[in-house]
Image 1 (cartoon, rainbow, N blue to C red):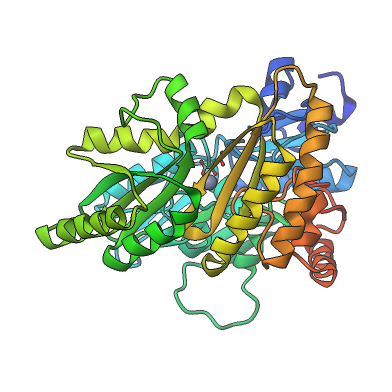
Image 2: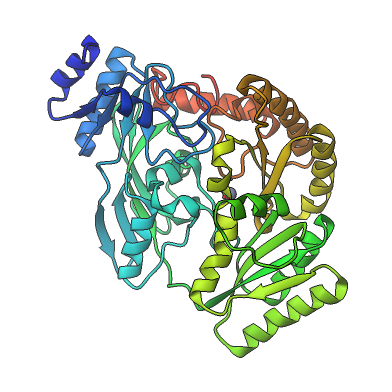
Length: 462
Ligand code: MLT
Ligand code: ZN
């Protein structure tokens, strides 16, 4: 602990747990992007809200930048500490604090993993419905920071819809208790919503009160093989019209190729260019008949070439694995990720334009498409060719992102649907937000974080 600032920090907050080993700096200084070399000053692991406040006050006084840190499963560089920042990890603050059966809310510390929230809700006969593949590692605080979406947005919405209240430590070190679990509250600005998707730039979320809902109804999973990209939205419409959809996700043969190489079992004897995995409510014969009717209608139109319906929970999990394992199976290629969205009505035109654009831009790259097509959210992952250096690869990808950002602007879409802007998409924020809007954001930051110590350089430059 040679840095005198750390000795000073421990004098200011004597109970604080600090980590400074090289392995810890590396581990806590990065997220899943793997693009930046971690170089934090140290890792602070507070155990109480008071310690978080004391650390923030100390950092403000000494003008030390803080990177709030959850499970660091983010894909936009929002939790990266590459410039001597103090990482403020919420990992020790990971408990359920309260369950209220009347309000149907669960109050948790921000460092709790999403999976633990799911389990706690289930123990009370309810569910917290936001869900995605990193559930075991990501934290609720991180989910709030990014307004995480995932695979059930089509039915339940994003994280934002499920936050009944939260406690946040601002850049001044003040504790704000926002909305206090109220269902109705017309008493002025809703600062809770300002914090959601703020990527740790306005405050450190320390506690959240989450809304819970009825447990999921029985459902079935169907995997569809599609002959072409153009029919995707037709298949979606055919299923949405007849069924209560829980999820509607698509991926390409390239995505399947990587998931199979990662250990999954091939779903069909033949290879098809596109696939959809959909989950739908299926508690009775009428719902199953509706699913079959949707499938048959698609077959008759030639929009679907094959399909399989799960016959057991094990098989449903196997089908889901084909979609959920994509990110992990691509990770070793350090993919350049685009996470874009448009309104569902704009999807057909946007998809056509994007396909043409990327076909021209990346003729020799392995480009893997997948995503939450039912939410208008597309993930485009470009894999780095083995012979290409990091810098040249990213430069080429960024040229293409500039074109993609132009197309998004034309279709009134977003450069980040659910991963956040972080460092990765900072240069493209203006494709989604007007200059006037960004100025307002800067002004809000100045009020809540006057010294600019909270996650500086992420989302925008102050
Ligand atoms: C997903 O939908 O699987 C996640 O957003 C992660 C990713 O895009 O890699
Ligand atoms: Zn996603």
